[in-house]
Length: 64
Image (tube, rainbow, N blue to C red; front, side):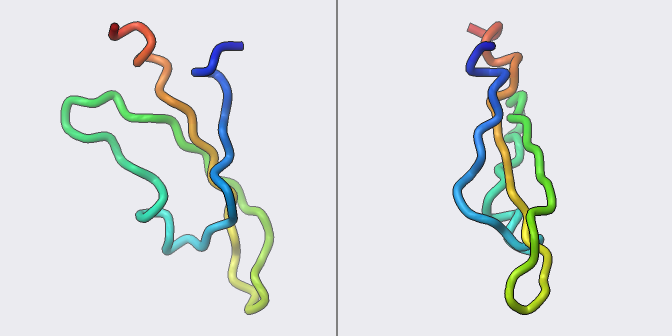
């Protein structure tokens, strides 16, 4: 398994409204990275929390 196949979990859990602060969209001309989000429980107010995983886009390896 190469480093491009491995999902890395971002530390912590996030509310849905925090995604734009955590997930970086691809810039024009970039391939972008892969992101995976899954429900991971609720906070003390009952709001849903999410775990966020990231991996570099596999195409980056072949662009060199």
